[in-house]
Length: 123
Image (cartoon, rainbow, N blue to C red; front, side, top):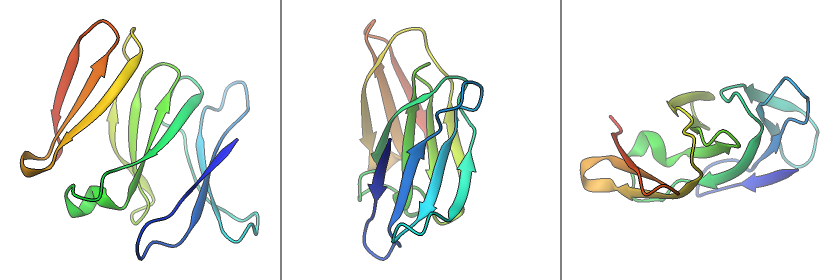
């Protein structure tokens, strides 16, 4: 399973979930479908369930990133420019329902099914 990520001046990339039983990575491949793996990120302890793009109005370092969300409800922010994981928010026992951004203060809020919210400042 994969999802194409592209924004502005970024080159188009394909992010795919790893399917191995012990390797729960998010791999990045070049486009057009050359099959060339650019990078693989193994930041989660469970399989990746979703990829999201960050909003365009966040700080410049995060703007060129993709978010991976794993089945353990951990969240990783992976920089496409730096080709590394720049933030990793640990898993939580309840499902992640929402990610909200507050760009002026560089806050991100992770809202979970038990009505717990974690507020993180991205610096």
